[in-house]
Length: 68
Image (cartoon, rainbow, N blue to C red):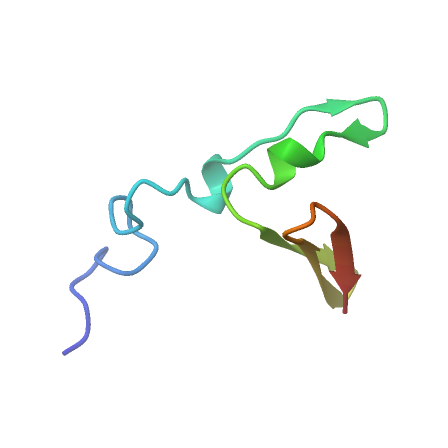
């Protein structure tokens, strides 16, 4: 059965307290972003660059890995 109008996975309240991507913001100082802000909710973020999407992951040893 399809979800009722306005009742899909992106609806507020369906993500158990996790902020929606639209509600999230980070502070940029000059050309610097603190990685603690990027990874405050997850250990992985997706970065769109032109037509490509890259994955930036925080490892268990607190290193960053960028993959295409």
